[in-house]
Image 1: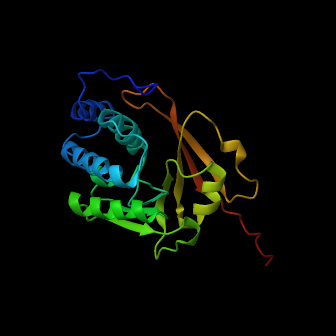
Image 2 (image 1 turned 30 degrees about the horizontal axis):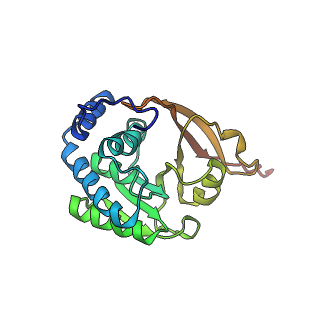
Image 3 (image 1 turned 135 degrees about the vertical axis):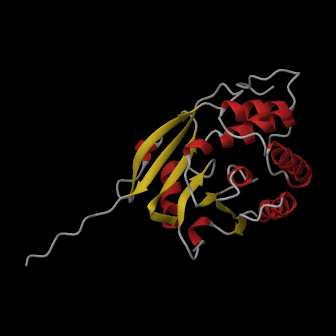
Length: 224
């Protein structure tokens, strides 16, 4: 079993999800859709190698609960998941929050093909899948939240994805114990607003959210 996992042989993926969501104070009515997503991910993984994690219980914790631990701290109407891979966390957010508009952004055609199929089969009409490099993506409307789970180092994430963020929005980096906030370039137009520690159910590992907001340089007032 993967180091850091605190699960027992008697645990099933459904039990892990139900107990985990309760621990995160999230509703459990979407568990059937979460399980269907995991089944689709496992099926496509055999052909497309979308993720290195293949054991169902590990996927339930290391993909679903690890992603959804961030959800209670996110407030968004429109959110883009940069480098979403297999849809983590964006697809999982879309399942739990059908009132949000979620864009899943990745440059890998096989992964975005899977995401489109999964969105259709799960009946998620709040999901848009975009196959494009983040620095080239130019949406018609900016996003309240630009989030990344395993896309790049924090400084690079801010540089490449910053243009997607609404002036009143946030960029959110999902990270482990390593603090990369001091590696942000001095000329980066974003500042660290807060760091939120996360506790992932059934996982003995440190997680944190880094919230960045756009910086505004005040213009000198003209003399009358």
